[in-house]
Image (cartoon, rainbow over all chains, first blue to last red; front, side, top):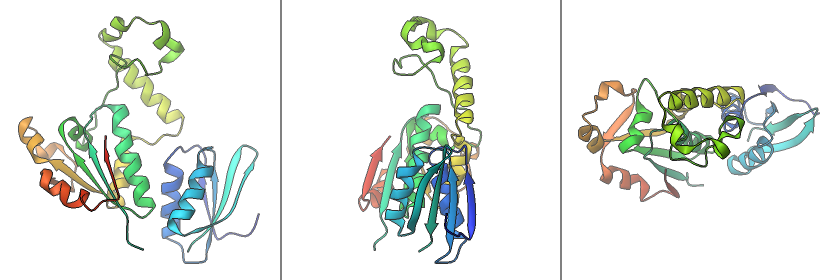
Length: 76
Length: 159
């Protein structure tokens, strides 16, 4: 896992909360900074891909580890 | 890139049907959409300060029930007193246990994201509703006001 600047634990949250919380976290970050998101909602995998494509923020990494879904998003 | 626009008409006032407008509006906002929801008829219940929405299996054969009851429980019995309250309470518990946001939370997130909430003035008058029962920040207007935004929208949903 690469370095990150901020972390968001969205474990236990269901659609659309992980996306909404991530959006809020990114809003408080400077461009180029990286947000690490931890989620348990399986739907979040496709959702974060779509979120990145539509908002221009870069999804640097997306992986599953021990039943958790981990994402690295770089703020555009 | 021009900002995309989403226009939603919310017409239903039950617990289950209250979710789609708020989920879609809050998500659209997070994706950068400018969003408006026009609440009409029973949809106005979604704007009450005190959200007391219910869900009922009556007349809804598609609603999953505990213990697979939708398969064997006689439809007529779903009309019994207390069934609605019981199903509503079970649905709320289920949602909380699955990490689904409460309606109050989703509605707040919509307002934070500057989703515009418009109450149908005609419905307010029709049902003698008291606007003091509604949350702050609601605009009261009619169909023409909706079309002003909807006519320029990229997505328009009737829920």
